[in-house]
Image (cartoon, rainbow, N blue to C red; front, side, top):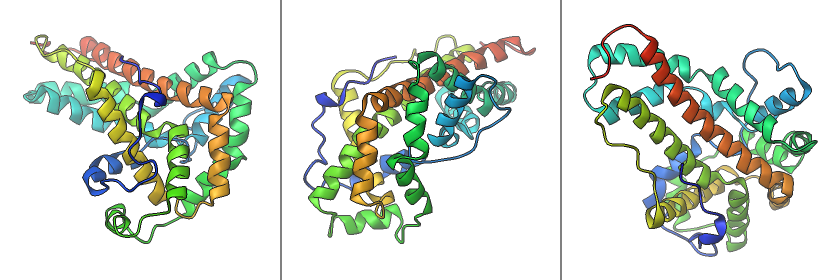
Length: 293
């Protein structure tokens, strides 16, 4: 998988001035549907056995992992079907249960938690968990979850072009978004899912075009658009979060532990998606019926 370049290679058009909000509404809406560390949820399945495994699972809960992995199977099935374009009824009947099995939320969550546990230096998971559950990041999450914006994102974007937030607020939210890696994560997930979908497509269509990751200027443009969209989404969702809370959450994420968490969590999710794609192919290969043509 092509690595995401570090933030230093990007200029970030949102910093310090209004930008083309309506032009990036579609991607902003997509970013709002799932990533980052300000959503919450509950653990799936049985509690992990070891203390470190339990810490990893709690980190995932505080990270809002359910918004990333729940209902992923249905969306992935549709993605493969659209990519292949001409799957037969028999192929679809084989694909659906294979994807449901391979992308089961408990399997995805287990893969992600295992990688976090394996990669964590001693004490790191507890350090991250402390501020995810009790620090400024936790406070920001609680405020965002409790807030019901009076305007939809689309309506807010229309008003934004007339009466935007202050430059100070934009810069603060932009820095918070950069620290969370939300825009990069969206592109990383997009690429991981596309790679997995191409892998499954080749099971049915061995002569299908191989996956080609984004590279060069195309990748940089996609990252910048995704980052800008993530900032817009964050500005809308965090309107009631005080500056002091956002600054504290940003400092937590910019710490050594925070940088480790953001990078490791995002890569773990991407690797879990890739592993799920391999499981789909294995499931398809093990099921009786017509093979790939």
